[in-house]
Image (cartoon, rainbow, N blue to C red):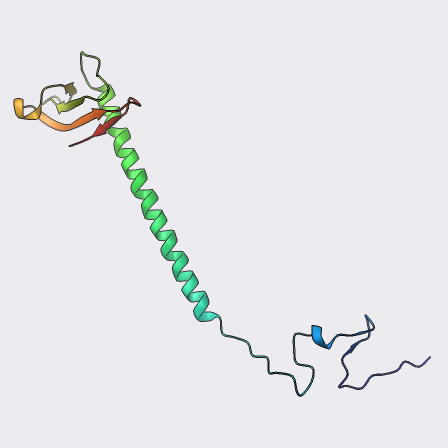
Length: 134
C-alpha cells in the first residue's frame, strides 16, 4: 500500500491527518511574517526589582510593628509587676518610677511634683493595656 507523500511546502500532519499550518509556532511559508523572539530580560529585571522593593518595604513595616508591640509588651510586663496600692482607672494617666533598689512603682504623682526617677508616663486604655505617652 502506497501512501501519498505531500510536497515539502504543504504543511500536513500525518498523525492527525490534518493541514495545520496555522497552528505551528513558526513560519510555514516564504511569504509568512518573520517571527522574532522579544528580549524579556529588562522586563524581568524591572519586575524583580519592584518585587524586592515591595517585599523589603513590607518586611520593614512588619518589623517596626513587631518592635512596637514588643516594647508595649515589655512596658506592660513591668507595670503589672510594679508596686502600687490602688486600682488604676481606665482613661487616666499614671507615672512609672524606678527606685534606687531597681524596683518599679506606679504613681499618680506627676514628674514635675517629685524627684523620683521617671521611667515614663502611661495611659490605661479600655482593653486594660498600658500605652506609653512620654
